[in-house]
Image (cartoon, rainbow, N blue to C red; front, side):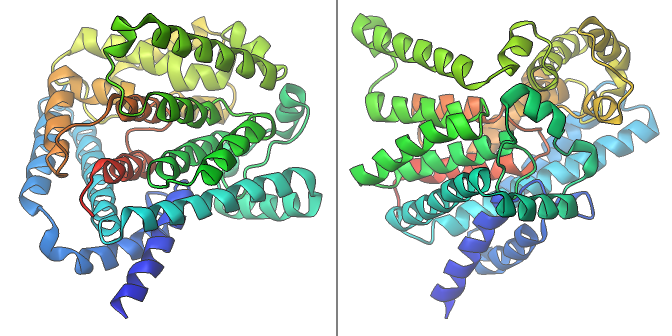
Length: 402
């Protein structure tokens, strides 16, 4: 009975990861994740390292207390509440990691590959069959906020067609999920037929989903199949490997240009709002935060402490503040990498990374996986459950202990 329940909750937890943008009461992770978390808590209670979890929570609270602006009681309450929410998400992801360890690596690989196949064919069918597209639209209108729903006019102008999302909020989320599932399927499977299917699926989705985040999976596929178990120093001592990597990156760049349609014009002129909110604004905010407090950052705020800087950058890049969506996005940074340094500074980020690494028994992380993690944390915000469940899933693929 326990074995059956473990498998059922594994499937439910992966579904919860897939629908990570659906939340409970607009704050907590979705209902599937919460149900699985309760089961995992009781199922793996003896394995949980509560001492390290508590230390991480204390460190997060301390860093927020000593960050800029904490003397303001309203701002301090916001920081503490977000700190607790961040700690909860890390704890949920950690429990997910403990449950993944119940199964063999090959079984986890098969499960993630099966999900990947379902997602691929779902996207293809949605793209070509209109009734499926209408069902997906009804689902999205029910579960996702209309403020950030897809602009059909913009989609048709930029890409020439409505891009499929297969019950996710937007195509970029498809790219994030598919790239993560690609990594797990590659590392925990040994079948060449599955590898070939993944490669074919990535190329097809490049022209159907047309999200740059699909290229995260494509880049990882190339690195894993070409440089797996190769030391990073090989690029210095053997020029042919560097030339091979450089040639592939040029190929990816040309593929992006070819697949992005009219959007490439906006990207080339730095006029794309997605590019601005995901990368330009977060990078600019990080520089500003480092100038103010490089050691412990600004704390987990919504950006009020640097609001003048944020509005200045928005005006510089001609970002219209007349739409509610743009005004909201100015203070919701969808980039955990930059947001980590904005919130906790250099010292705080280092301490958090060190303590978090102690939750898992991994001696070293291959440079290819470090590269993937770096790309992944640039796709979602610091409070997103997706970031932490993804990182702990990657940890599972590195951990050799079945």
